[in-house]
Length: 405
Image: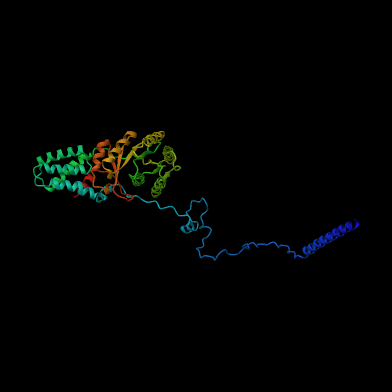
């Protein structure tokens, strides 16, 4: 028994001794492992700061100016164009002097060449036939209707022509031209008052609303009308009440800057009536002669938008009366333009018509038809894309341009 106990003790001593050797060797190995040197922090040297007298770049040659030549802030002096370029600021565009309106329609008569060949020269050719039978008179009626004169005015004109030709007897080219000219002028009715009421009142400017459907050139016409008024000596304020079309206010402002007219505008999608109200308010403050308000191009089928147009007129009238409501119509739309005109006349009291694009149509008779439809005169006509291609309408000059020399 003692032998067994002794053997167990010896075994335990051997096992414990071996464990101590293992632990000791591990400690030695751990002590022998190389230790990594302490990490040295990376220091980024900041870029050297420029010192006094250092040049940032090679010096440029420039004109030296004395202190007297450098304008002070707020002094009202205009900086030299070179200085503006360095500041990346463009100088304001030069103010243009619009072409005088007197006789402008005569100068633009060549633009009516398409209407001339269809209406004026076409009628003269038919009337010059040796024999004016029923077929010829029917052709004359067709020519007038095709030129958008309208059925009722056409029948009146043909009846008067037949009577006068029968009484006249002889029909020389000069006599026929004089006869046709007289009847066409009478049909257009020169007795209608075509004056633009744009003179200011005692305390308020004259207010002109420009209305019409999309695509008739309404904003462009408003800008051109500003040039017409400036050319006639009026001071103008523009109201960009077309807040639904993003480019409308920018476009109108560009037109105004060309003639030195201020443009009042509001936020995109804002209340058009508010912009129109502010424009008239600004016109009163500036003592302007005329305020032109460009309204949104409304489709005549949109009842809500048409009601809003009536609201614009009512809000503006809080300052004073609206002197003119000009309806812009595209002459190329023909009878469709008459449908538009009827609806607009029901919402606001139209006082005059502006016919655009008469240079691109063979239907100059729309002048007669739209006057008969609304009972209001055509006051302005557009005969091209040029800035001064809007002319006051003159019946005699218009007819002379249609039938030629």
